[in-house]
Image 1 (cartoon, rainbow, N blue to C red):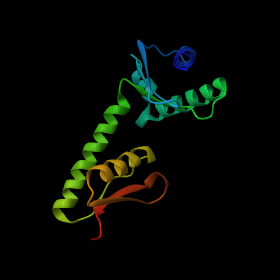
Image 2 (image 1 turned 90 degrees about the horizontal axis):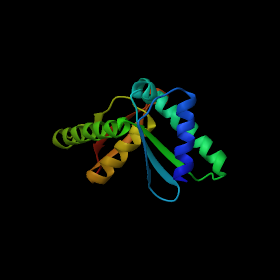
Image 3 (image 1 turned 30 degrees about the horizontal axis):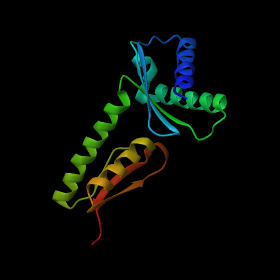
Image 4 (image 1 turned 60 degrees about the vertical axis):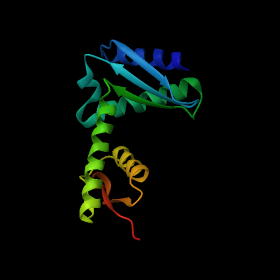
Length: 152
């Protein structure tokens, strides 16, 4: 499967004229793979707030599912560790806001963010702060997270 993913991604990058120096593929389990593309065109691949990266990942997932005839494959694509850095930044934000919430007993409302980053915060808080809870509020692009103390 790794070879199929690499060849398909190479062909896709070639068709859209993106230069890259390395494609790293990590098998997470039987159905999940993590890819990091090292590229001098990283800003083109990432796009505004990761929009191009999301589109590339979506397209690669569709192609691999169609070619392999397996619907249970999931591929996460990163470019020059952009997503990894973003995830660390989001976790640091969650940590800071959780500490403020614990110290002041005041709920902390975070700025609107994508469902992907909201999920990271929900998981991070639930795994690291047993006395805090998170909830999503708002609709659509304005959806945000509130971090607050659990009711005793």
